[in-house]
Amino acid sequence: MAKPIDQERMSTLTGSDDYARRFIDPSTFKETDLSGVRFLGCRVDTVRQLYRGSIPAQLLEQLAEVSGIAEFFGYEWHVGRVGRDSGYQIKLQNADLGLIILLKNHNVKADVEGPHLKFEVSPHLIDQHSPAQLQSLMDDLAAQVLDDCTPDQCAVHLALDFQGWQPPPDFVARLHCRARAQREFSTVERIEFDERSAVYGRGMSYLFGSAGAVQLALYCKTAQARATDKLDYWEGVWRRQDNPFDPADPGNYDPTVPVWRLEIRFHHSVVDQFAQGSVNLHTGEIIDTSTFGELSAHLQGLWGYGLTAFKLLSRPGCYDAFWTLIRHDVTVQVSADSLSDEVEYRRRYKTANGFSGKNVELFMGNFVSLLARERVGANKAFERLQEWECWSVIRDHFSEKGKTEKDVYRWLRDKLTERTVRWGRAV
Image 1 (cartoon, rainbow, N blue to C red):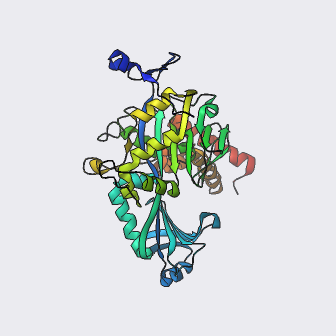
Image 2: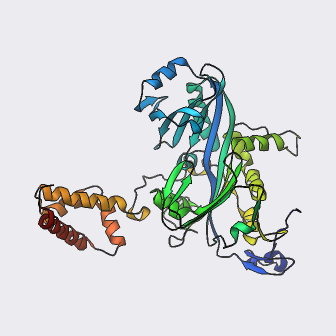
Image 3: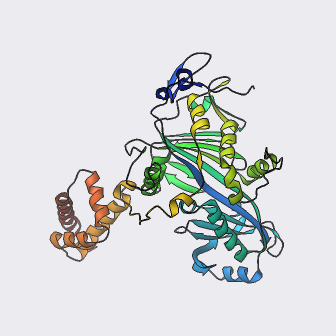
């Protein structure tokens, strides 16, 4: 198949920026207006850094005696065993830090040098550090974990968040790639994202390729973030896109419109092929990267490669206008250095809008049962509820349903009465 051509920008034909987001097919002259597309950032969503070395026997003995929370390498971790499918035996996880350590390869003895260590880095830890800082953190931890430790390549996921464009009904038919595995999820109940489950009712997700090569995923990020109770975090990231000095400024982000994510996932074997096959045009040397810190300077090239490995065509031989736009206009953001000294970082409090509200409803139901058991009246119960640190979330949850604080009181009073009359005070 011949290399597809891009659609022409009308701005280059007219000489006016007013047409910068309008495209025309050079053969059919069909015009596509993408002026409503809003980019909310293209960034590294996941880093998986591998290391080789041998594991000290003393460390394995200490880990074997631990189940649950323990301190290692200067941080607290939840320590446990992990399934064989992961390729490792031991997992240390600190979700607050944003790091998972997978240790002891199933196929190599601990005292033999081998691929015994893998770090999985979450988006918020990546966002808080420049690539050099993040690599230094991983290298320091790896040196404490393994003897004779050396980096052994990395895997990365690059993610573009956007609004104003949704996959057309014939998206699967027009997305061309070498991958045989193609999956479409419509009105799904459960989707797997990086070994984590997100449950939601109505949504759509597409997945092309295999986990051991290059994968392209397209899904509604708003629905997935809400299902995993992380919408507040991502809204803060999207708002910060245009104005890093004022996180409250929405910029391009419109909270009333769903955010979609196009994610390209590169397995470490593909990254290694990319590193060994890419040549510096000035020196003639291959880039030969083995760490995320080294790869970070080449992420734009990796993004471009992903968008040629997967091609959305409007017709045979011609890229879809949206594919032309994201190939030419999207820049991968790789460093937080420019923000670290200029942004005022604050604690991010979750709101009722950021999740389904299921936790609030479960709590309120149990709260009523306990109040009835202890014979607490509605007035006193409502006063205690308002004094609680989580009252703002409960209030916001009811507010989203159009209810005032008085309505919350009436709801609590009526539920207490119903609980007492129908079921009695004792539980």
